[in-house]
Length: 355
Ligand SMILES: Cc1cc2nc3c(=O)[nH]c(=O)nc-3n(C[C@H](O)[C@H](O)[C@H](O)COP(=O)(O)OP(=O)(O)OC[C@H]3O[C@@H](n4cnc5c(N)ncnc54)[C@H](O)[C@@H]3O)c2cc1C
Image 1 (cartoon, rainbow, N blue to C red):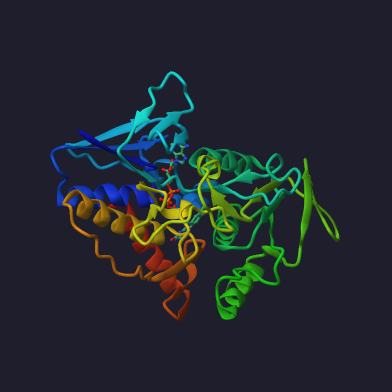
Image 2 (cartoon, helix red, strand yellow; image 1 turned 135 degrees about the vertical axis):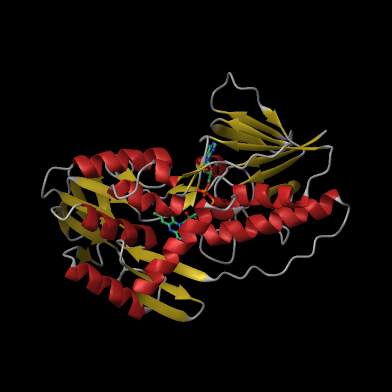
């Protein structure tokens, strides 16, 4: 029996499972999906859980059931690429041997070596850390000072959702750049900044943070008092991938060949936020790549040469609370109610994917 281990049941990993079983897998292949959680957690909605506008339960999607699919729940700790073994953090767990492996573990915060950033801020990058952030944000006393560091998509969505959830809080969105959403066109960024001004969320640009301590953010121009600080100022692949001794790009993502394999270890595929792709990490990119990895695996099992088309992404949508949104669909900029409705549609599809 040959064993395919899919490490990580997020947007990339579950797409691979779904596509593989749609086409049927060879009788001598066993597929094992490994995750620390017993359900898929919808990371694109973590901002809503942190803000208190969505429940934990609403963000869970059951894993698909298939004959030939084995679920394994545990915390992956390391991989021995030469011996093809996956080790778990709990040493009582038997290591898992693989013939083929997909690494789809997603990302974690990048603190850019800023002293105190990890210790004195909270995170929205893992389900467990979002639950902790939810507690801190929702237990904050009336009129507390909340600072969200990083004005990218996740910071913007969190600040807006928190404003709707807690009108009393003093919320500031801090960025070291000149404007919010630097990856989006100026017009979208201006719309979002204006929404924040209308909804009394302070936006602060050109703030270069030097360190964090309990209750205070230090930056080059002074100090900012902070009852709760949320870090949304950068991501990098999870620690297990950081520790892999293979070529990586400047963001620490694993360099892969056109079939999404590690060139020196063609039995190992890398998917989603862990993989060096020509676009920014996103659920859509992870899903599209997962689709292709399933195609490659199927072709290899049949002894065929995989034929892949270039990945084309549809665009990015962001929310500003429950009624407004923004986005970029191809080259078209969208703001207002329509992108918010579209985003709700995307979420609905994610939740009902396997139905
Ligand atoms: C607040 C927020 C909003 C976002 N909004 C959007 C959006 O609107 N559109 C968009 O396209 N993208 C968005 N993203 C980005 C998107 O969520 C990620 O790019 C996407 O989830 C990456 O998919 P993935 O399969 O690589 O990893 P993930 O979906 O993160 O899945 C990784 C899986 O690995 C598991 N795991 C991790 N480490 C271990 C371990 N050591 N052992 C066992 N299991 C482990 C996790 O439990 C998880 O199930 C957003 C992200 C955030 C934080």
